Image (cartoon, rainbow over all chains, first blue to last red):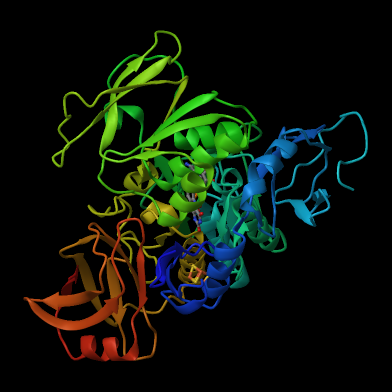
Amino acid sequence: MSAQGTTRNDICLRCPRGCEVITVLDDKGAILDISGNQCKLGIEYVKQEINNPRRVLPTLVRVAGGMRPMVPVWTPEPVPKGLLLDLAATTRSIEVDAPVSVGDVVLDDWRGLGIQLVASGAVARRAGAEVRHSNGGE
Amino acid sequence: MRVNGDYDVAVIGGGPAGMAAAIAAAREGARVLILERNDQLGGILPQCIHNGFGAINFGRDLPGPEYAYRYEQKVRALPVEIKLNTMVLDVTGGRDVFAINDDEGYLHFKPKSIVMAMGCRERTRAQIRLPGTRAAGIFTAGTVQRLVNIEGYMPGRRVVVLGSGDIGMIMARRLTIEGATVLSVLELMPHLTGLRRNYVQCLQDYDIPLHLSTTVKKIKGKRRVEGIETIQVDERFRPIAGTERSIDCDTLVLSVGLIPENELSSQAGVVLDDHTRGPRIDSSMATSVPGIFAAGNVTGIYDLVDYVSIAGTAAGANAAAYARGTAPEKRRRRVRLVPGSNVGSILPQEIEIGDDDSRPTIMLRPNATIDVSVRLRFTADDETVTEFRERYARPSEMIVKTLSARHLDQLRGDKNEEYQVEIV
Ligand SMILES: Cc1cc2nc3c(=O)[nH]c(=O)nc-3n(C[C@H](O)[C@H](O)[C@H](O)COP(=O)(O)OP(=O)(O)OC[C@H]3O[C@@H](n4cnc5c(N)ncnc54)[C@H](O)[C@@H]3O)c2cc1C
Ligand code: SF4
């Protein structure tokens, strides 16, 4: 950071409007001014982006005995950015049993960090599919 | 041929536009039928597993499937008849609807009104003229989205994406999350064509390089793609010799853009707009054919599903009123809106300027990037009648404006039938 303080531009990711938020910081990194955000979530976003950037991870997990092979899942609470690929690798090894409903927790408190993966879609059971084991995160 | 059932409103397509239309029409007491060719409701949302849906209608940033689910719950709680796996083949200007499904065979409906909500489809490879072989491993982004997100099938391990549109960037991230390596996103234009939000969260976050002013020169491989050669282009899109670069990859994903799905609209004699390539509509979502309404991506490509649902709701309510015979008479002054400079397309193409306090909403798609504050002007004979301010204009973001009392007053005070809408 330069001695005169700096300006940073961020695209707020909290909603699809994607405001371009301009933040002026002093030479110690304290925020002097924030503009461009259309709502106050933008301020929160920039503060988090400066200290500990987080992102939502949308992905899929496999389903056994379902009408479809995969169910979409997401982290309703954003995850530290640096952990995204680790979490993605974990989700690739998860398989849950059908049926799956919207809102089902597929993975709870990952690595003790309070991170949850939650189903955002539903998969019905295939008629005659055999019962295997209990669902991953429940 | 026998007519099946007795419906007030038939909705063609069960995506967000169709579901919102069905809900609104059923709430008005209409007998509603949804005809959907897929095996589930939701349109393209079940395959759009990323978040980015619902900020306006639910105050939350939801994944596509969950947004669709919330609407599906509402539809299913109402007495709406839903026929899945049912493909509509033909619609006539007299409102005959012909469809087919495996269980019932050929079907003929004669609803009192129709909502066209067929969404859009991707351009094909032929439409973007790609040089080289016909090897396996070349997919459109929407196809990859369906393969990966619905069928659970990975198209390849080493991927290049051509086109920086939203679906391309979103799929670059998806494939990375699933363990593939996305080597590059190439863009012919000197700027990003999708949303900057997607550049940040799909490319930057996953260290996927974006190469602007670059395209594919050659595709290598006979049976399967083995690599590509890229080349940079100048400001007039001419290849610059000596800038070739080889990339070893097994998959090329084309983010080629979307066009409204309008065979049925054309068959019904609905007038299409040259700019949106969808039906011309007015603020009640009525097309040029009486009793036929249209909403959503079929009328022009929307960026936000929330506005699609809002348009669907208006189409459904107006279709129900038409079916009942209580549609307000078209007595009010109607004015046409025509794209002027820097405006690619406008929805709706016709608005009513009444004496009451109804406030039409218009949506403009800019066709130029202007990164400083702009004015959005309604002009007639080069005179400005009313204007708005907007912070910037970008082709990737639709500008949505609800006319205020002041704008309406200014338009009421003027007597033209057509206004150019321009961005300056
Ligand atoms: C890849 C992608 C990413 C997107 N990302 C976002 C985002 O992050 N945030 C956001 O808000 N919006 C996003 N959108 C936009 C949003 O998803 C669309 O605007 C919305 O889904 C359009 O809804 P629709 O009902 O008009 O069309 P669709 O969802 O396409 O639904 C049309 C339906 O009609 C059916 N149909 C078509 N023809 C027939 C026929 N002949 N007979 C029977 N049925 C038929 C189809 O099967 C389909 O189910 C995205 C769009 C795409 C393509
Ligand atoms: S500042 Fe508010 S309106 Fe703008 S993108 Fe962020 S959450 Fe959305």
